[in-house]
Amino acid sequence: MIDLSGRTALVTGGSRGVGAATAQLLAEAGADVSITYRARRAEAEQVAARIRALGRRVHVEQADLADAEAVARTFERIGDALGRLDFCVANAGIWPEAEVPLREMSAERWRETVRANLDAVFLTARAALGVMAQDGSLVLVSSTAGQRGEAFHADYAATKGALIALTKSLALECAPGITVNCVAPGWVDTEMTASAFEGGGRARIAASIPLGRIASASDIAGPIVFLCSPLARHITGEILNVNGGSVLCG
Image 1: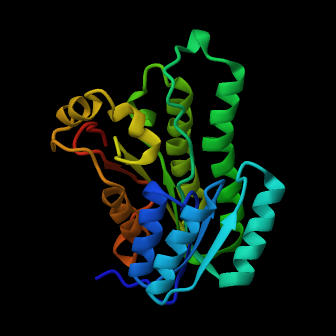
Image 2: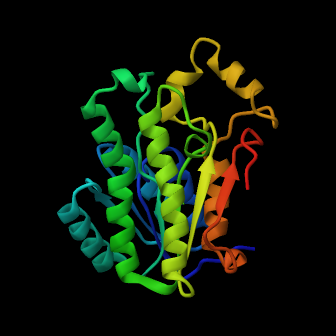
């Protein structure tokens, strides 16, 4: 039902997890896809191979998205490879797994989380909006942590809350041509969060979710692709909760 043939998309952090699943689903819907990665080239190439097998064009780019010059070079190369840009999914980010109360958190950890989760999205969104087609879509990936907070991960929660505010601001700035929305996942079964599922953690977390299970990466990718599609053409500034009912907020 969703047909994105002839359209192009950028997915940051596309080498694994939600980013890889989103890139794959966009390609299955007909889009050509560019993915960025920070360090996992082999995994990024595996994603690219699956996209090529679908008959789609794909571009793979290593980039430090928190570096303004690197972002500029990245978008120049994406333009050379795929031409126009219709969709941008700002998915790349980190979740520092160590639990640290704010009173003990180092300035270095705080800065690194802000750099990876907020500065990088600012630079990515700024560059994307400068070249995006006027019927395009920007989707930011936040978290339930940005809605209700996360004890001992205040740095992560603060950056994800900022993305929600950024979504609402950009939705107003970019209307009526470009839609800007946000997906806020709860727990997702990916490599990034694997440590939280150890030692009985998986069962405890699943029990806290009304739907009774932890989301897969594909569970998050589907709503992202929906927000890029014509089915969502009258949706902007929305925070789409994909959390199995664990956080109920408007």
